[in-house]
Length: 100
Image (cartoon, rainbow, N blue to C red):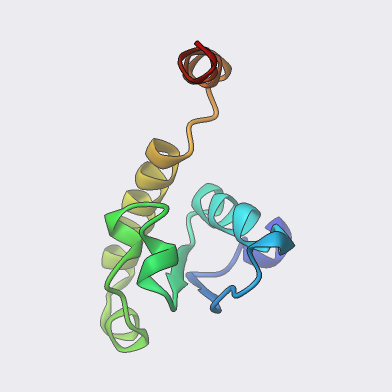
């Protein structure tokens, strides 16, 4: 998947009616790491990852310059890692609070 996305400027993310498929968990991270913009059809699903994922349309993306796409991809990456921290100590702290 990483190889396939490596040259992509944007990746289309269809509606996921079955969240049990795990598909939605990996693609946003892979796109963020590769610097590709992730276009999500559903703002409800996009809201899970942050404001930079929301309110996009195919028309808006097609009208963007390369610089604007790079900026959006960087904002999406920042939003993704804010909403999905991979720091083990942060995860442990959250679990400790929940388990207390």
